[in-house]
Image 1 (cartoon, rainbow, N blue to C red):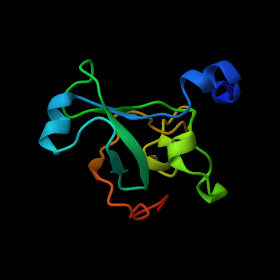
Image 2: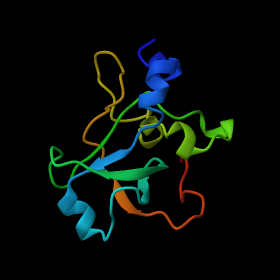
Image 3: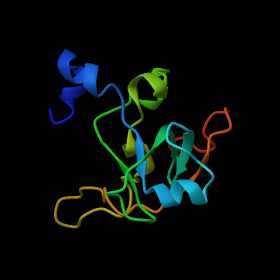
Image 4: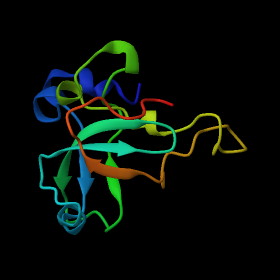
Amino acid sequence: MNSIGNTLPDLQRQFRRNHAYMNPDDLRALDLVSGDAVEITSDHGSILLDAQADNTVRRGVVSISHGFGGLPDDGGDWRDKGASPNLLISTDRDVQTINAMPRMTAIPVNIRRHDGTAPVRENC
Protein backbone atom coordinates (compact mmCIF):
# COMPACT_ATOMS: atom_id res chain seq x y z
CA MET A 1 0.00 0.00 0.00
CA ASN A 2 2.90 2.41 0.47
CA SER A 3 3.37 2.73 -3.29
CA ILE A 4 -0.25 3.29 -4.30
CA GLY A 5 0.21 7.08 -4.37
CA ASN A 6 1.33 7.07 -7.99
CA THR A 7 -2.19 5.98 -8.99
CA LEU A 8 -3.89 9.01 -7.39
CA PRO A 9 -4.83 11.68 -9.96
CA ASP A 10 -3.67 14.66 -7.86
CA LEU A 11 -0.27 13.09 -7.26
CA GLN A 12 0.04 11.98 -10.89
CA ARG A 13 -0.29 15.60 -12.01
CA GLN A 14 2.53 16.72 -9.73
CA PHE A 15 4.75 13.61 -9.56
CA ARG A 16 4.26 11.58 -12.74
CA ARG A 17 7.62 9.82 -12.49
CA ASN A 18 10.76 9.65 -10.41
CA HIS A 19 14.18 11.09 -11.21
CA ALA A 20 17.81 10.47 -10.29
CA TYR A 21 18.63 13.38 -7.98
CA MET A 22 22.34 14.19 -7.90
CA ASN A 23 24.63 16.88 -6.59
CA PRO A 24 25.26 19.51 -9.31
CA ASP A 25 29.03 19.00 -8.99
CA ASP A 26 28.58 15.29 -9.79
CA LEU A 27 26.48 16.16 -12.83
CA ARG A 28 29.20 18.51 -14.08
CA ALA A 29 31.90 15.88 -13.46
CA LEU A 30 29.93 13.45 -15.65
CA ASP A 31 29.28 16.15 -18.28
CA LEU A 32 25.54 15.96 -17.58
CA VAL A 33 22.82 18.55 -17.02
CA SER A 34 19.39 18.29 -15.43
CA GLY A 35 17.06 16.45 -17.77
CA ASP A 36 19.72 14.23 -19.35
CA ALA A 37 18.78 10.55 -19.50
CA VAL A 38 21.12 8.39 -17.43
CA GLU A 39 21.64 4.68 -16.99
CA ILE A 40 22.10 3.67 -13.37
CA THR A 41 23.73 0.25 -12.98
CA SER A 42 24.39 -1.87 -9.91
CA ASP A 43 25.89 -5.34 -9.82
CA HIS A 44 22.29 -6.61 -9.97
CA GLY A 45 20.57 -4.58 -12.69
CA SER A 46 20.05 -1.27 -14.50
CA ILE A 47 17.39 1.40 -14.77
CA LEU A 48 16.96 4.53 -16.87
CA LEU A 49 15.93 7.89 -15.41
CA ASP A 50 16.37 11.59 -16.02
CA ALA A 51 19.09 13.21 -13.91
CA GLN A 52 18.05 16.20 -11.80
CA ALA A 53 20.38 18.56 -9.96
CA ASP A 54 19.71 18.85 -6.23
CA ASN A 55 21.98 20.87 -3.94
CA THR A 56 20.77 18.90 -0.91
CA VAL A 57 22.20 15.60 -2.20
CA ARG A 58 25.76 14.87 -1.05
CA ARG A 59 28.52 14.42 -3.61
CA GLY A 60 28.86 10.79 -4.69
CA VAL A 61 25.22 9.99 -3.86
CA VAL A 62 22.20 9.50 -6.09
CA SER A 63 18.70 9.69 -4.59
CA ILE A 64 15.82 7.86 -6.27
CA SER A 65 12.23 7.69 -5.00
CA HIS A 66 10.55 4.31 -4.67
CA GLY A 67 7.00 3.53 -5.79
CA PHE A 68 7.42 4.38 -9.48
CA GLY A 69 7.91 2.32 -12.63
CA GLY A 70 6.38 -0.95 -13.64
CA LEU A 71 7.60 -4.50 -13.75
CA PRO A 72 10.45 -5.28 -16.18
CA ASP A 73 8.19 -7.22 -18.57
CA ASP A 74 5.36 -4.64 -18.59
CA GLY A 75 6.85 -2.84 -21.56
CA GLY A 76 6.15 0.58 -20.06
CA ASP A 77 8.20 3.64 -20.93
CA TRP A 78 10.41 4.93 -18.11
CA ARG A 79 9.80 8.49 -19.34
CA ASP A 80 6.10 7.99 -18.60
CA LYS A 81 6.05 6.16 -15.25
CA GLY A 82 9.67 6.33 -14.09
CA ALA A 83 11.67 3.29 -13.03
CA SER A 84 11.73 1.07 -9.98
CA PRO A 85 14.99 1.28 -8.03
CA ASN A 86 14.12 -2.20 -6.73
CA LEU A 87 15.62 -3.48 -9.98
CA LEU A 88 19.02 -2.39 -8.63
CA ILE A 89 18.61 -4.46 -5.45
CA SER A 90 19.35 -8.13 -4.93
CA THR A 91 16.83 -10.07 -2.84
CA ASP A 92 19.20 -13.04 -2.60
CA ARG A 93 21.97 -11.33 -0.63
CA ASP A 94 22.54 -8.26 1.51
CA VAL A 95 19.36 -8.88 3.47
CA GLN A 96 18.58 -8.22 7.12
CA THR A 97 19.09 -11.33 9.23
CA ILE A 98 16.13 -10.61 11.48
CA ASN A 99 13.46 -10.14 8.80
CA ALA A 100 15.09 -10.89 5.42
CA MET A 101 14.37 -7.35 4.19
CA PRO A 102 16.74 -6.37 1.35
CA ARG A 103 19.17 -3.52 1.86
CA MET A 104 17.58 -0.49 0.23
CA THR A 105 20.24 2.15 0.87
CA ALA A 106 23.93 2.56 0.12
CA ILE A 107 23.71 0.43 -3.03
CA PRO A 108 26.90 0.95 -5.09
CA VAL A 109 26.01 2.12 -8.60
CA ASN A 110 27.62 3.48 -11.73
CA ILE A 111 26.00 6.29 -13.68
CA ARG A 112 26.51 7.17 -17.31
CA ARG A 113 24.70 9.12 -19.99
CA HIS A 114 22.07 6.96 -21.66
CA ASP A 115 23.02 6.38 -25.28
CA GLY A 116 19.52 5.49 -26.47
CA THR A 117 19.88 1.72 -26.32
CA ALA A 118 18.27 -0.59 -23.79
CA PRO A 119 19.95 -0.84 -20.37
CA VAL A 120 23.05 -3.00 -20.41
CA ARG A 121 21.85 -5.26 -17.59
CA GLU A 122 18.19 -5.44 -16.65
CA ASN A 123 17.49 -7.34 -13.46
CA CYS A 124 20.50 -9.66 -13.82
